[in-house]
Amino acid sequence: MRIERSGKATAGTAGHGAPSGRPQLNPERLKQVRLHVERAIKEKKIFTLQGPYPVIRRLLRARGWVERKERGAGRAGGPRQQQEGGGDGEAGQGAPESSSSSWLPDDEEEEEEEQQDEEDPEGIHDLMSRLVRDQVPYFIWTTRSSAVQGRVLQPDQVVNHYGRVGSFTTKEGLCLTLRNLPWFDQADPDTFFPRCYRLGAADERQAFIEDFCLTAARSLLKAALERAQEVHAGLDPTPNPTEPPEGPGAQLVEEALRVCGQHLGSLTHQDIDGDPKTPGTTDAAWDSFLQGYYRAVHEGAVPRLSGAQREQGQLLLQRLAGRLPQLRMEGDHNVWILKPGAASRGRGITCTARLDEVLRLAGQAAREGRWVVQKYVERPLLIFGTKFDVRQWFLVTDWNPLTVWFYRHCYLRFCSQPFSLRRLDAAVHLCNQAIQRRCKPGGARHPRLPPDNTWSCRQLQAYLAQRGQAGAWGEVMVPGMKAAVVRAVRCSQGLVRGRKGSFELYGADFVFGEDFRPWLLEINASPTMAGSTAVTGRLCAGVQRDTLRVVIDRRDDPNCSTGAFELIYKQAAVPTPPYLGLKLAVEGCSLRRPRCAPKPPGTTRLC
Image (tube, rainbow, N blue to C red; front, top):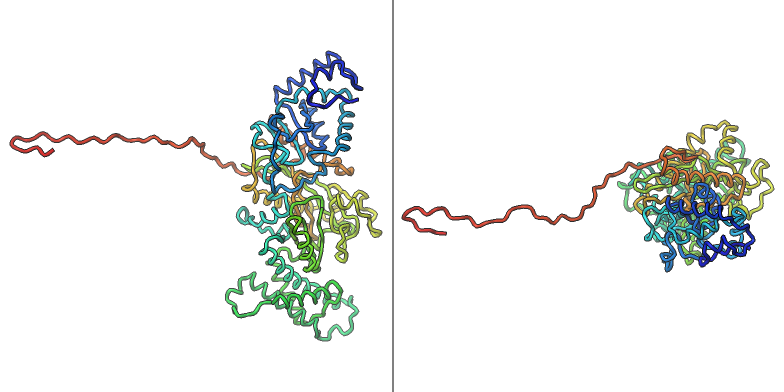
């Protein structure tokens, strides 16, 4: 029988004669427990956890901290009197990626209690928790920021969340926030973030439709030029390759050349002096073009190019490449990915290559929340023919001045089946572990891929070294990820509600192009710390250990080790003059009536 966890129980009943299956504490041991608790209270080493974080609990206890267990309380962060009547969670935060919530079901609570009992067979930590049940916790770690009442926190309480981080931890927020990057940095978000649109906004919905059509025109030229190269190399068995093209295919190519030429003119501002009477492409013409594009690219009926069309198409794509940073990675199938604006763990994500399907899916899901559509990276870096992404942690310990730490270790998540744009299944394209654990490996899966679909970054570096590309990791991939992280948080600095003493650990997801350039997909708050594989078990424990080194140990010893965390950005502090209130004093002297000069003899006095 376990010690009763009710808040009504007293510390004395736990140690003296209470019926329990645990060994009774002798007086000397009980005295040591009380002294330890008194020392923790004096040194403000009381902590609270919400969610299954056994690594954090174990590391804090090793540092002399005592846990104040929350059982049936409303919110963390203050005495029980302050926790009653908590308000709603903060809007726009996004769902935490951790599979646990602040409140566990009964069966999960029992499982967690049994795990804690195994770590605490004598019930000592349970007893100490009762002794500090009325104390204020000075370190709070939760899965949601809404579990903490920020308004009642004391200045010396440390919390693992900031407020209003949805500006970059939700897909919709990141899509909107990165558009302000030119105000903060001389960089183009299109160089590291696939272009993205919020389908709930009418203007962005129309912009996406135009982007889809323009991408289809470029994709048609790419596919036709690729076929022309195959014909030239003798790989295409089409008879009479020198015969001039004609028919619907030739008209489709001419339309694509015209559209791409107009787009290039608008990008280079040549359309300013153009003829304003030049008609644009109508909706009906776009519908007809897209149907021809689907037949050409998706069904394999790629039209042949004449010599003039080939030269014109190559020149247009070369000039567009200098204006469109995503031209190479966007491929030629025009695949887009539809995502819920504030969900996690891969829920609701769909890949599609048809405009009508995107609009139909978005229309059906509009009643369930906000959605974004993002360009899919069609030419990713593959390992043994399989797609993967990278989970990269970073830590923010202050928002003014902005202070960002980058974790040197990360892990890869593989898909279960080989990469192919002919199949848009989740098992082929979505690397999230919550999705892949439900997918079956394909028959053509390479035998050297890990059965649990995870690699460490060191395994990736070894793979690149074997292929003669050892420098790609340190020279292109890591610097690109660091730059993307810093730019994303800088854009959000004015939107996040910072707080001195707080911190937050984030998980950024990247996919790499064939040229090793990283593409930021999303940033997650409360990244999962569940070690479901050997790789994630080791790395998740390590990042939690090093997080405590940065946010706790470094306060007492600025020169202590920060583990694998590297400080990559610290904003210059801007001194602000202290506010002393309004000064209402009036300086000066009073005005007096001037005295008259003495009256000369024989004159009349006038004043």
